[in-house]
Image (cartoon, rainbow, N blue to C red; front, side, top):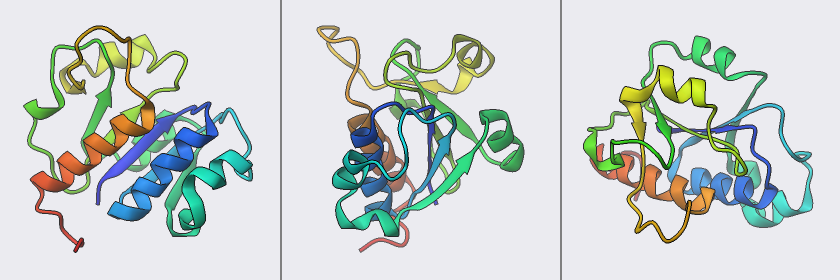
Length: 153
C-alpha cells in the first residue's frame, strides 16, 4: 500500500480530490493536523464525490507522531525546490509521500533533515507549483506502476 501524507492541508477540494485518488488506488491518506477546514466541509465531500466512505484515512496530531508510528517505512518529501526528480527512486510497497500545505509547502527544517529523499516533478519554470491533487496523482500512479499495480485491475 502506498501512503499519501498531507501536512496541514488548507483547501478542502484538494484534499477531496486526493481522497478520491486514494480510493481509486487503494492508497491510505494521512491528514496531519491542524486542518484548514472541517472534515464535514461540502467542498471536501463534493471533490471526493460519493467515494469518501471508501477512503482509508488516518488523522495525526503531528508529523512526528505519524513518523514514529510508521518508523519502519520510507518517507519521500515532495517539494518544488530539490535536486531529485520523482523518477530518481525505485519505490516500494509501503512508501510514504509527504506533501505540504498549499500556501507554504513543507517546512524548511523538515526538508533540510530529509534532503536525500526530497523529490519533485519537473516543470518549465513558468509556474511556481502544480496543484497539490495533481502532484499526488502523478506520484501515486508512478509508485504503483513501479510495484506492478498490485491489488488493482
